[in-house]
Length: 210
Image 1: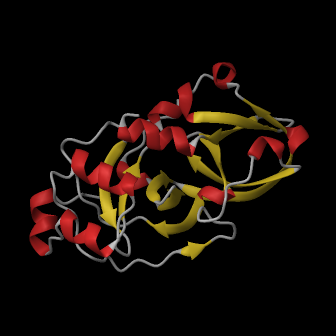
Image 2: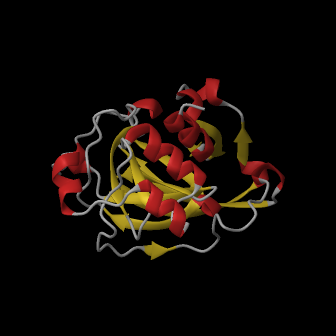
């Protein structure tokens, strides 16, 4: 899917960050992203996309994943790998839509969309997960995740399953064992393979340079 240039996209409609702040539209993380990568401009107010909501929710206090008896995760595929995201981070899943290319964005970010007045960076984690390199057209869905009011969209090929995993079948802090850098916080242990659990907080920190 070909992305529009910032000039093409912003010509349709422009919202100044100052106006967004006054209306309370953006979180502090969103404003930080706008200031860093959007050169004091945002995107159109809306793009007509509908998503499927999941239970849980990042607006609630996040449970301690390592202390829970059972952990629920959403599984998805990226290239030749399956990765899981804890359910409390997942706000919704939408179909891939047209996006705006950002020339100055970090390597993980292919561009941004505006989803119901939220700036959503689109994140391609395939390279950092050691997956095969994928053309953008291979990504069919965006998993919209929420971290402290900052929403990001993880690009995936498909949703595989919903996992409900007992703590005994999880292992944490094992990045060095599976060789996918710092974006994996743990694994689901299966008899035939290990499924990495994506560290959404680390993805956000990487984007914002924290």
